[in-house]
Image 1 (cartoon, rainbow, N blue to C red):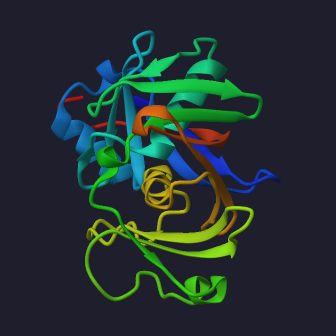
Image 2: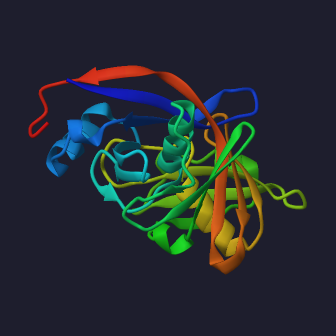
Image 3: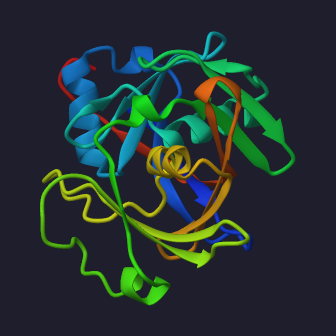
Length: 230
């Protein structure tokens, strides 16, 4: 039997919103990659994380259909959970590389490169109303991050994210990697209001790095058993 911590990552100012995340605290419970993929598919969240070494920050990320080298909301959630369990880290190590972690009050931040989140296409719309009116998903293929300025002077963006990869994730409630890509394209810090009530903060850093931060909340525990290889 495998215990999965459920978090909501990138919650809004009032605690609502946030993208559901499954976290397996001990990756040794599910050592086989096929079993990890099966568990991620069974849970049905946009991503599930397996912590392979909490002290070293080694983490493995899966969507219901593919393994990811880097993703924003899983890493923010993992960093927050490790601190909540009494073991804060300064670095996480997903397959993409070393991801610096900082804690700032209610916000947890991770640092990455836009190149680590390739394949996410952004498209600007003329108004928040146009973004809100999009069907889920919009026609077309491939990852789409639809956005519009809510307040350009303040750097506030309204966004919606559509993976369109055929794994039943019709729309992502909050997507740190896509916000990171958009930040790299615009070259400025952003306050992204995504989904039904989520908030993602971003800021460019030296050396082409970009920080992504947000609030995290616990949302219960699930147990799963009977997976092959687990």
